[in-house]
Image (cartoon, rainbow, N blue to C red; front, side, top):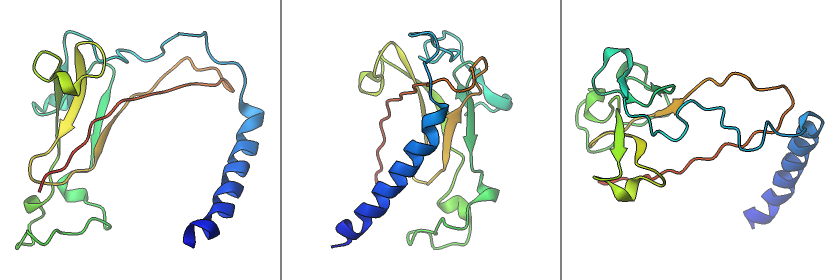
Length: 152
């Protein structure tokens, strides 16, 4: 029942977004041109971000994360933590490369992938990069492959 009530709202939102974006779309950048520095994570040398050994990042990329002192109000303490210490359930994740030779199931294409993870605790994190040289109004395409899992 709820699905049928939500469908018209979703269609209206999609139509508004399409109409709003339509005047701004044009031809894409040069076809096949990759604007990302090391967009495939194949660089030989990766670096520790901000001198933190657990934050090994591909060149041109930057890790972001919510540190233990900045936990968002919507994060609820799990029932298995019997202490008020957020370190029981929250941590800055570790970032590193996943090499095909060691983890063939974690590399979609090529020889390396970027990974981030935390053991036994939650995290909120990701990767980003700033891209320059984009002409206003062009259509861009970005794709990513991810593997995620959770154990308890």
